[in-house]
Image 1: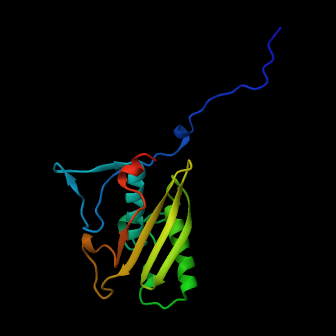
Image 2 (image 1 turned 135 degrees about the horizontal axis):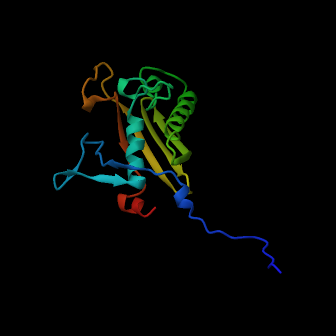
Image 3 (image 1 turned 60 degrees about the vertical axis):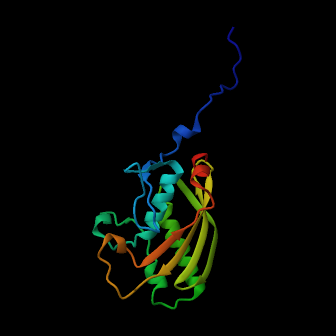
Length: 181
């Protein structure tokens, strides 16, 4: 006689199925430079690398740089300057388009499931934006961005002047807290 086996239970490790975030190098966006430790770039992984990717994505104006051109037209970056510089669009329109543009750009990352808990304050061009980044696998963190225009008449040709917007990021988590997520 064979024993009755109704259900086989398998223990699986869900983390193996999750996409990898990868690694990057820490970048000080206020100073516009890579901080060094013992003369070397500081490598970041996991959530820290994702936060650097988010900042770089939000600071890159879509369709401006040939290095990011793709045949499928799914280009890197966001289109925000047209919304906030030199235009007087209704606040509700700007708010909806900022949410759409940022969501579309950031959810292209395989680890970002969605963005939620949006809060947009201020008037063009001084917008303070905060949102929650919801990751695949259930973790999340808050991300804050302050959009301020600089000199809109200046043509920007150097790496330091990559965009006409300056961004300040203040996360609700410290780097040490993020390592434990």
